[in-house]
Each structure stands twice: as structure tokens, then as C-alpha cells.
Length: 540
Image (cartoon, rainbow, N blue to C red; front, side, top):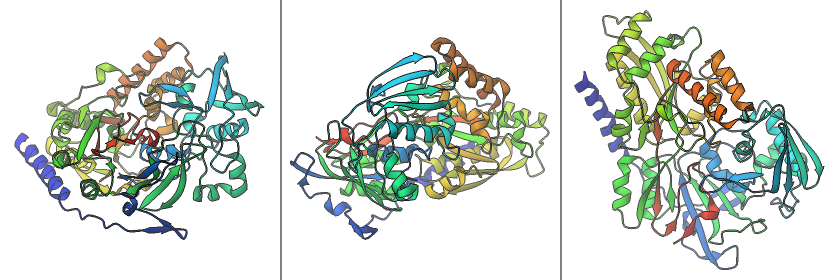
């Protein structure tokens, strides 16, 4: 059996290596968006006037996934936030070391358990010249907290209201004590939007021509090709004068991204698979930058009646049948760490006893399936499990899915009907939660608080996805949301992780490391939240 598993994994890795060499380099071209020409890589080597009048050039970044939207409150996509966050400002933000720092506010304090008071800076303006005031804060925060159609709503619904005192002073009231408010205000969804502009042009108009107050301004977007930004010369803080323009080129095929980096067509690429690291490092002028991340490969399984995985023993068996360590060390070539929790390193409330650990016991897995009433047929198959995943959105995601499928069939006789989709199709299927039996996720955490991770085990997030509903987990989540005692709150978050590890609505597999390919003349450090902070990327 071990030999057959090894053979299947060898096939997976071999196919991956063959695919990596088959990409065709994109030709440099100009595209248009609404009649406006958009420069691509041809402008890369041209010196232009920068933000301070000095010579500057175009920065080009090759990304694996097309941004879903420019509405920061309508998505739960780290890949999109990594790009569009540069156009917006938040009340609080994270620096490159993930410390919470003041951004749009100059001062704030807790008035009582449910009231926080804030003072806005008076020099912040939107890209259209309008001043940013407390009315914009009220509009933005209450939109996230009250519009149930928004993807960010479940995280923000604890906010009751924003009380405007004057243009630059306001209070945020929560329904109950909310210890994670600072983390909430500094995460995606906390971007402040221009109230008057949106009321004037409507949300459709805003989506076509977004206006923020961040260090970079929107120039144009061509679907499946590129998004272009330029420095905001009226930004209230320091502006990076290095770049006259930044182009995010959408390059879903990894071989194309790597080829463009090696030829100088782009300066930085994300989502570089281990089988490309030697190629990038051995090239004169490029190197791999490998850092920690919060993304965890998670096999989500339906817990609702009518699915084999509704039985906890089946979910446990699947978890025991998957060799997480083999995936981390062989499939991902050391590009990850096995884990039994979604709460990654650097996130408040991680249960360290679950990190670096994994369940793998084929005998126990088969016994659990026998006990659950799923014997092997004459063909050795117990049942068929539908599995949907992405191919090219995350590091070696297709290979991870194929390895899981091979292990389940060989180790316990679960035949996997595997469907792999390109990045856009994958999002269109999983965002509305339309998968049938199981789906492979690679969730990150830009909240940096364990409450964000355990939220996926509660009905607000799980219904339609895994449909998992555990009364004790719900109680722990609700209590931890309002518990101002940090020590007790962490214990509650950790207990929820322990229950989820036992009942397995998701089989947590590997905490993924983040690999970038970078031109040697670029000073770039990847962030734990994966955001491309354009203000900190410079020439060496």
C-alpha cells in the first residue's frame, strides 16, 4: 500500500514538474479599459517623474488571482485585499511587523465596556479631493455592520452604531463588550469609503471608478489582465517616490509568472511553487523570498444530513487517512507545516499543542469507517466523495488535492471525484458555497485574532458551507467575542479549537509558507498578511 501511495504521489509531482516547464511567455502588449490605454511591461524600464519630481519607474507585480472587486467590504479574499488595500485607509492598520498602529485616527480610548471614542486626523482627503470626516466613518463602519449581503458582515455585526460628535470626533458603540475591536478596525472591511461620492455615483459607479484615501490611486482595471495604480500625491503620510505607476498583472499560470520574472517582465511574483525555487534562485538577477503566512490548507466537509460526512466518524476517518506531514514535506517540498488547527503562528489564541501535529493512522481510519456502516465493496471502494478545489490559486493547490484524493482511495477505499478549477471559477463556486460534498480551502487570517478562525465553526459562517453546528463551540465563540479578560478569552478560543480538531468539520492539513519571486534590484519583504505594501517596496 505504501508503495502504491508513493507511486501515486510521484505521478502527481512528476506531472506538476512537467506542467511547470510548459508555459509560454506572454508578449508585452497594451490593453485598453474604457478607451484609456494601459501601459504594461513596455513602460517598465522607462524613467518617469516620481511623486517628488525625481526619476521613478513603473513597478510591475505578477499575481496569481484576478482581484474579485474593489469593494473592500464585499469580499473575504486575501488575494484581492493584498492588492486593493493600497487604495484605502483604515482607522487603525498593521505595520510590517503586524503591530496595530494609528492610521486615520490620532487618538482613541475606551469610554466604557461598549463605547470607544476616536479623534480623526484633519489632513486626510479622498482621491477626488473631498475631506475625510466622521460622516464617512459612520457610513463605512455601519455599512459593514448592517448590510447582511456583504461578506464582511458577520465579523462587523457586533458594532451597534457610530455616533458622530463633529467632523473629526466620533464614538463607536458595540452591542456588548468587544475586546477585538482594535483588530477588527485594522482588518479588511475596515477601509473608509467616501460617503458623498458613493451617494452621487451609486455603488455601480464606485466599482467602475473607486475612490479611497490611501497612498495609491486607482487608474484602470482590465479584467483578467491587469490593475493599474499611481501614487496619491495628496496622501496625508509619506509617499513612496520610487514608482510613477504600479501595475498588477494577472498571470494565473505559474510557469508564465516565473517566465516573466526571469525575463524581467515583472519585478515581483507571488505563489511560487517549490518546484520553481531552484529555477528562480539559479537565474542571474532573481531570488526566492520565503516567509511565514497564516494560510492553512483545509478540507471542508459537509456535516448536514444526506452526506456521508454528516457522520463524525467518517470525517475523523478522512482526517486519519491523510498524511499531512507527507504533504508538507514531499508534495509541498517543505513549503508548509502540518497542523490540526487553523489558528496559525502569530495569531492570538493559537493552541500550540495542535500546531505541528497531525493525525495519520490508516488502521484507525478503516475501523472508523467500518463502525460507521461503510464497508468496502468488491472493488475495494466504500463510497464516492466529491471534492472541489483550485488549480493555480495557491501554492501547488492542485497537487495537494490530487495527493489527498490518492490517499483517501488507497488508504481507506473512498473514491474521490476530484474537480479542479481555475482561480476565477473556483471563487464563483466556493464564494456562494455551492460545493456538494467537500472542498479544499486555503484560508488566511488578516484579523490576527483566533476569534476569526473559530468563526468558521459557527452557523453564521458554516451554514451552506460545512453546515457544522456545535452548541459548545457556539457558546465559546459568543463568550470569547465579549470577554474582556484576555486570559479567559484565550482559553475559550483554544477549547473551541480542541473541539473542532475532534469533530473535524474541516480537516486542517498544512500551514502554508509564502513564497515570492523577486528581482534582485527590488527591496521587498513579504508580510504575514500577504498585503503588497507599495509604500515599503523600493529599489535597492
